[in-house]
Length: 238
Image (cartoon, rainbow, N blue to C red):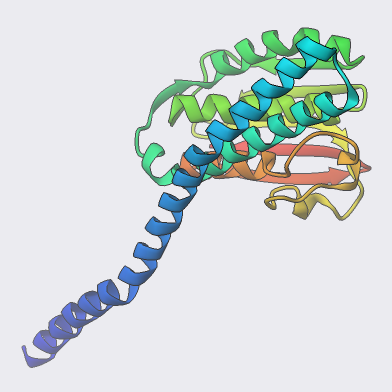
């Protein structure tokens, strides 16, 4: 009885101390997320004004290299602040999870991207099994899938394929085969603000796949990337 009482006291003490030890970290994380959200809101207005001024200049004097450059940088900064804001609130949004029709989301996005792939001289191939659902936040899941199509369009060299199927009763597999990547670079694709050699000259902020990984992780999914014979394959499983 004395040993059990001692263990109980030790357990209570450890729980109490762990709360005291981790509270500063939790407070720091909360303040950091709050700062990012506030910074995102503060940046929206000046970016909107700069973009509107560029449009006015183009209407008055016609398009120029300078105004087009301004518009590109505004789009880039707007996208960056939006993604940083989304990364800051993953904890809150990920809690609101329901059954999402992943098949329908992918089919809809594939249809909306067909013309863009065709204009880029690339082929979009899809093999989407119908009726596949995953538990998650539908808006965030749609954003992640849209990011995958956008990345495939940007970096595909001739074609990109999306395959969605059930591997067994409990595992959902989404596999994307797209751009060619140098051997040894695959570990960097999920790093934030990392731009690989094949991204030279293309718009982007290096947050795309890290954004996808965080969303998938928040929905109890796993991401795995590999490069074989120069071909890049991304596998997502639930």
